Amino acid sequence: MPYTEAFIARRATPGGTTLTFRDRDLSPARGSSLWETCPLLAIAQDRRLAIDLCEDFTSYDAAATTGDYVLTQATAGSAAISSTVPGCLSIDSGSTTSPQGANVQRVKSAFIPAAGKHIWVEVRVKFTGVGALNVETAIGLFEIDTTVIAASAVSTANGIGWTSVTDDGVLLFDTEKASASATQAATTIVSDTFVNLGFVVNGVTSITQYINGVATGTAVATANIPIVALYPTFVCQSGGTDQPVLHVAGYRIVQLR
Image (tube, rainbow, N blue to C red; front, side):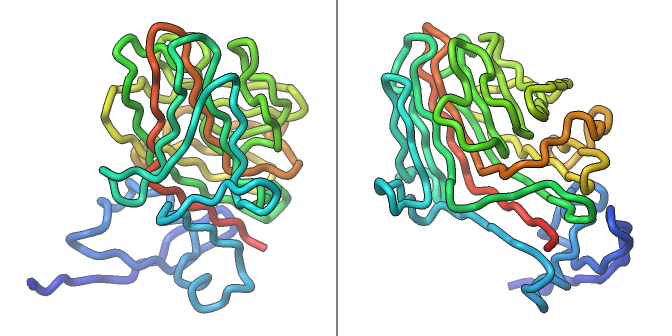
């Protein structure tokens, strides 16, 4: 096995500065990861500093009442660990009828934006079964809601993440605070192609979106940052014609305590 050099560099973070560790051969290029601003080394040494949820999907527990996840069907839909992609949850809309499909939330993990309590989120996803790109989806942190998307519209009042409800295969970065909504461009779905979606919440001051490690768009303002409990959320519903499947190949969420 070839020797791989590594180095430690000092980087700016929303709350000041932090030390980061980067492998020369395995890590993303400098400047192409939102994690460069997250104090992961300090957190590894002192778990009191942050909540660190790293979901690798080696299992999926959606048992009634006691499970980590809750799946709610909009008539149809299912979710299961993939047998073809390691560490991946496949959420099948199970239908070609709009707006039928599955609403999945990890209800045991609350994250609440607050001053000085910065949040880092990154999730790796792809869609299959979307030849016509007819999919209704929500990916990110949203309040507990069994109908995040209803009647082909985002119906939840609070959330931060990516949505698409217009059957054009375009994801928008969508922030909702008590139904005060702001959206901006994100990325277009490419069938059977993974994309890394991420954002950093700077307390209650701003939110920066990342697409494949690149800061994208303009910072979201305080007026659109929800300050209630938010939960990892994944919705995959048909927009008609297609039977989309959302593949979630893990996610990580860190929030300072």
